[in-house]
Image (cartoon, rainbow, N blue to C red; front, side, top):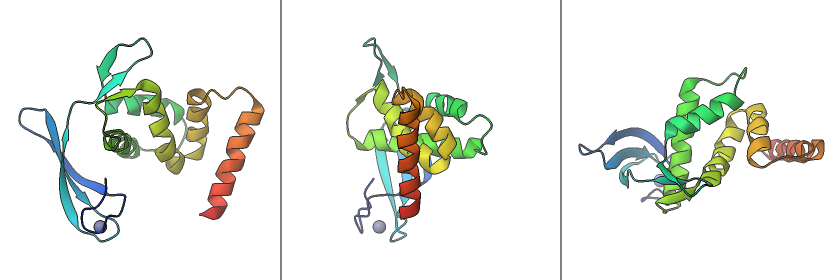
Length: 151
Ligand SMILES: [Zn+2]
């Protein structure tokens, strides 16, 4: 979500509440760059299209459930999982489409999960990106190392 003041391409949700009829969500956001706050209103309708062609409403709880499995034994809190699910929803909504393929949800999880916990990320990525061999893991780990050195 772009900041309307300085056009910074990221923002932090500081408060979020559903409208009375439950069809939209109003969010207070703060820009990490200029510190100003603004409000966005987003339609609650976001559908996930499964491989079978069936659709179901996007659910942050489902995202948390999937990621929680990959985080077993890792120092990741429920609060962090909730923030991650919110970020995933933000990314998907920012894409502007009311329908998203289920695998897009998986891909949208990868970036914030990598920032949260690299081991959990590798577990999750090995499933969603169908790692088939040790070389796939190796390539991914090399990439993580390179990114870490750049940071
Ligand atoms: Zn700003």
